[in-house]
Length: 187
Image (tube, rainbow, N blue to C red; front, side, top):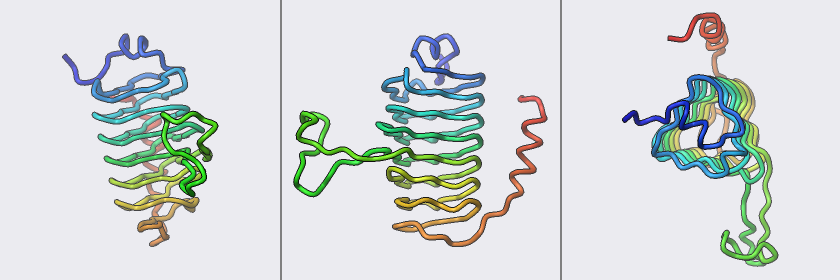
């Protein structure tokens, strides 16, 4: 048996939409698939968690042990790479002590806030990063391993740290490579 779901099995999962050449590990956990859209040429590896309102473009790779928690929304544009053990949250509990904090508590006793998380085209998130709610990772931006992203990230920059800070600009040669991929037949 293949370690990825086949097209018939993907259909049965009940995604809002999924494209061609979608490879999702049988070991991934998928919650509310009716809220998840997936483009073409997407691979999601073992032990990933997809939960909530998630919209993915094409040519995306999400590495093992990554979790996307999207009470609000997570949007992943084309050519994005999310490395292993990345945590992405579009929501957060209020930790002030004025409210309770967990999904087993009735909503009137909690205060969940958040906002849409967006990974723009060609962004890359290295292993072990944490992305907080209402963050936009700009086009072509790269986030170094083990970073904490709690503010928007400028396009075509390389960033790292806790919290992230710009290290330097990122080259744009990948835009030329994208044209070659889009124009060439997929193998």
